[in-house]
Amino acid sequence: MTSIDSAGPVVRRALAGAVPLIVPVTLLAAGVVLFLGAAEQRILILFMINLIAVVATGLYVGNSGVTSFGHVGFMGLGAYASALLTLPPAVKATMLPNLPGWLAAAQFGFAESLVVAALAVGLFALVIGIPVARLSGSAASITSLGLLIIIHSVLNGAKDITRGSQTFFGVERLTTVPVLLACVAIAILVARLFRDSTAGLELRASREDELAARAMGVDVARRRLAAWVLSAMLMAVAGGLLAHVLGAFSPKKFFFVDTFAILAMLIIGGPASVSGAVIGTFTITLITEFARRFEEGPVLPQLGLPQAFGLTQIVLGLGILLIMYRRPGGLFGLAEIDDWLFRQPIPVATAPLPAEAAPADAALTADRVTKRFAGLVALDAVDLSVRPGEIVGLIGPNGSGKTTLINALSGVVPATSGTVRIDGRDIAGLPSHRVARLGIGRSFQNIRLFKDLTVLENVIVAVTGSGRGRAGGAVAERAMAALAELGVDGLAGRRAGQLAYGEQRRVEIARALAMRPRYLLLDEPAAGMNPAESEALMRLLDDLRRRTGLGLLLVEHDLKLVMRLCDRVVVLNKGQVIAAGVPDQVQADPAVVEAYIGRRAARKPAALAAAV
Ligand SMILES: Nc1ncnc2c1ncn2[C@@H]1O[C@H](COP(=O)(O)OP(=O)(O)OP(=O)(O)O)[C@@H](O)[C@H]1O
Image 1 (cartoon, rainbow, N blue to C red):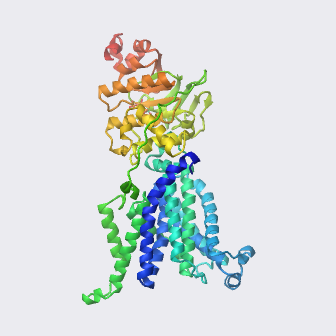
Image 2 (image 1 turned 90 degrees about the vertical axis):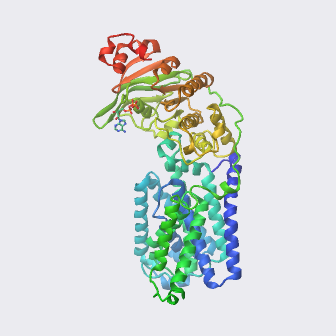
Image 3 (image 1 turned 180 degrees about the horizontal axis):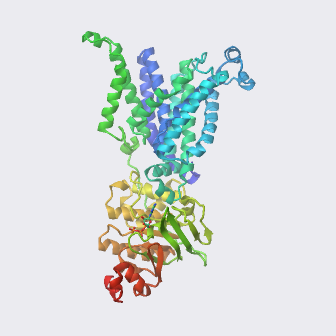
């Protein structure tokens, strides 16, 4: 997950977040074991198993933003696998006479059975996860629901192995409180390590904005797959532990009711937070037990009320409703307990961004690039080139195709025909994260920061996504250098969504710069800035390209700025290049004047000059 030079800070951060969660759970367990009876101990055991399952589900759901209905299926597979592995061969011979020979003869210790179950389920999740990880949003959620139903059907259908819908029994009750505590600690630590690792941060960025994460070089599908497999493995462990508590179970134990319960615990706590998973599980367990006792206990008859069947579910439902009404993001929201307990250190930029030598023939080129959206030709055989150290202005009236060209150059939309080359490499067929890694940084017309991440985290994603480093100390310093370049390093600890518009624009440019791209494509970077701010930004970009040899493609509506700053200007109109050349030449071109000001004004040659 992390390279050696950067593992230290990630492990430290994960420990700072995990230990304050593990300690209270341990104290709670010790208190129940020492001072309460068997009934409370059973509640404690089920609470801890649920806790592992909720933390495991949150590892995928919280980081990726994709709600999975399939994770309880992994739990079921883990339960059957671990139970089959610990059952003595003699019992298996009578209970499951048609079991395959190797499985009939296998007998493992409890801990080994959990490890083998986790590995087997992990492998299964890997195979299933390869297509699932390419999906996002509701498509991924519905697929996971299908997976739950398939696993349920297979468990019911594989009678020779699972006894089908009949109860699978005879499983020794080996799950103890100390074993559970160890597993809870491992689950919380793994979840925090993943969250704080490069993969976790990049996945959280994609949860906020998948397109922008890809533009930073993040391989979203790969990151999702890692979370999916890891969480499936932890679910298998939870299933194995549950099997050895219950002793007897059937496939219906691992279906909709438990899926709902686990998702409810996760959502109540705050799905994007490991601390939230712990608090959510605790809260729901508490509400459920309180309501159950109220329902079954002496209170209702004393009030002259009959026992209300289903009161527990009603109270639980109302409790969830109330919490969601008061705190829609869950009790913890996006926060982690260590955000409150410890101040996160903000590193200092140690050195400015270094310059990189470009090959002599380096260039970003579009060669007769055409883009059609159904019947609409947004780009029509467009030619354009940007060389290192050069600023090229891309102008044109609204709807002329400027953003579409930036999207085609950065691989966000594939060209219908024509060729885009980055330093000679044809990008046809490459996904946008691979194009980004070839040296293309970009900003967006509608700012696309990862709003719920901090400014520093936004920029770290660009450093790691583009392959310039992995999460940890040195990367944070590199990110700070990019922020300092734009004068926004003072905002590093703030959430990006809380910043003023102009600040967000600067952070977005810093984020693109942190990729150390060879070419930077800026789509109206000064929009929303006042004249002084936009002037300062342009001076900064000019200085940057001189110092670092960066090639800049600048889409900007302020023609005065464009004409003053750019070495060359390309003018688009209705998807076609109508003029290209040095600013003076373009400014005097009648076709440009006509496109901007209209046919009548075009008869007056000085019209555009007056306009700028
Ligand atoms: N994803 C899409 N699907 C369909 N049509 C699109 C899509 N993206 C852009 N277009 C169309 O392509 C044309 C060019 O749009 P584009 O956004 O590239 O223009 P622009 O020059 O950037 O405009 P503006 O200056 O207003 O940002 C427009 O007619 C637009 O409606």
